[in-house]
Image (cartoon, rainbow, N blue to C red; front, side, top):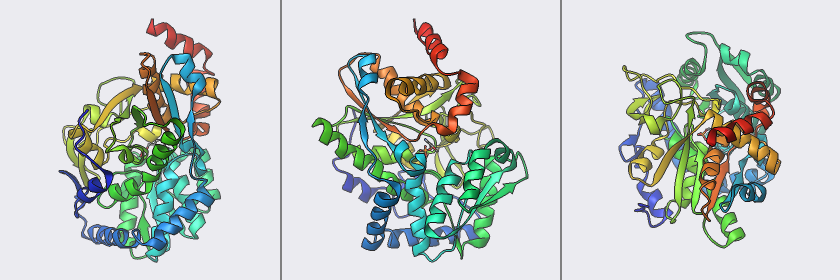
Length: 418
Ligand SMILES: *Cc1c(COP(=O)(O)O)cnc(C)c1O
């Protein structure tokens, strides 16, 4: 295992640099001068305000009283016994308020908006998970909230649209182009470039131009920091492997960085979808290469023109054609490893956790668990700590319609392994 890092504080001093670069990845490649001004103000605000003792104390109190942190680390004894000798543990972000890790950075962004004197939060959403988390933060802080969403996604994601409206957010339909996430991103950026005096833009993952990858990493760091001390307290040692699913890379970067200086193997699980051809997966590190999109340099899936390639996964929170720049750097350095789990493997993991432990995970999180199950079947006496990024309530209709209740699907997967 290659590990050049001796402690986390030194790592933090080195990365990112003042322009938001993690090695050669990151930065700000926007060309709209208004947006560049807006992002400079944002980075400045983040670097001064968010380091103040008052900000840190207030965020800590919010995490405890409103979000219900710390979330537990749970030893899956039934599942571990079923699989053999490997011990599987879960960091239960599904028990974070609103049912996933996304609220961790949304509350941080909302608090920053308040300290910067802004009145509105702006974002786009695809499946609606980020929109719901941000609408929750806006309600808490008494801020206005504009969520840009493609008309096609609005029709597909009715329950989340209802939630956002219930929370008082303004869901703005985007009706140009393919009317999905990509157009929603463009519309939200356009709105931000006009409204940044009164509003801040809130990204949904650890990607985008500086300062987003840094800021979201810092707000998600709590996940791994809690998990690390909880795990040590329960077992007396570090886990052998730490695992999380990777879309843009927010739950994973928060889970991973606190372990960076430890003798622990770190594995990001990307959505392998239904095959390895471009358009059948969203495994950006596994199949992608260096490039610039959405205002930052990283490893990504691009078409022959360098534009974002079409991506697919049965987990809509994972179908992003790039990863955050910190992932790209730590992959190059050999510190983080990336593997894939397919649609079917994720669903198998979802059913196994539901039936053996009484926990229904999100399909996104099930990708991370699927890798842990694959490893556990090898029968090594080791421990694997998995970030269970969210709960599966949002996925139930989809799962039942496509895969049933589990019995037949699990038998089919079992037969295929023989
Ligand atoms: C959005 C989402 C993800 C993927 O996003 P990352 O930024 O890669 O963490 C993973 N799990 C759940 C439950 C999500 O809602």
